[in-house]
Length: 263
Image (cartoon, rainbow, N blue to C red; front, side):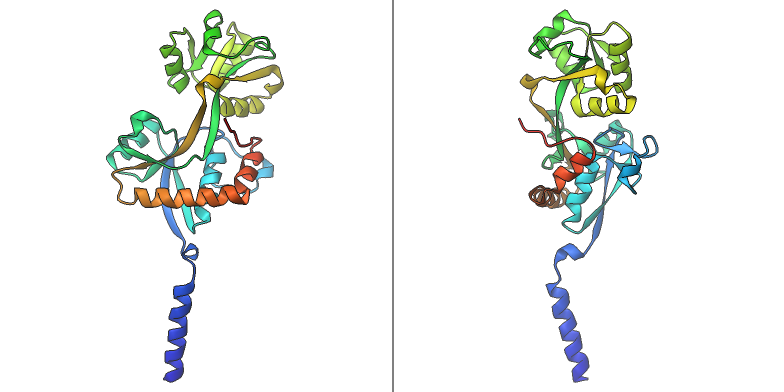
């Protein structure tokens, strides 16, 4: 009996000393197909050098999972239409959304994590088209400009009173540069580079970052109405800090052909 009691006491002591990181928990976050930040493997299977990946991957997703993994947390990613995701985050029906830009309109209903990644607004052109220009919004007034319908660049162009043609997506935007009369395609840089590589036209294009606009930051939006939003935001931020200090965040970005952006 004494031996049994000693065993049970030792077991309890050991369990109390086990780091919390070993107690794995799972959370669910929602997203859309937004390469290269978030990629639906059914729409765009990974290349062979990626090895085995989940049904949703991409550098924001990989950074997210790796950061939470440092804290003993696994993440299940579910795909839904973006408008529905934002509506459910606002209503507190889901925990949060990836990748979500921390813009003012979302501040009333969302808590934002530290950044998963950063990118720049860029002017995509035929090779060397703007080499003799400083890439500012003002120069667009003398060129034929295209932007993806519904993306943030259309708001920027509208605010600057710059006319533009709407395109349905990245591939169409790149194609109108190379095959039609458009001069500049204004869009998000990393997505455009990723699309150009897939289309095998990267050598025919130039990319000019618009420094006056600063960087776009991509994070996780946690619903303010969800009871565990602050907890999981803080856990993620701690994991992101651990990931950055270890150098593993850089490794993930390099796997996709990108590097950390600072400005």
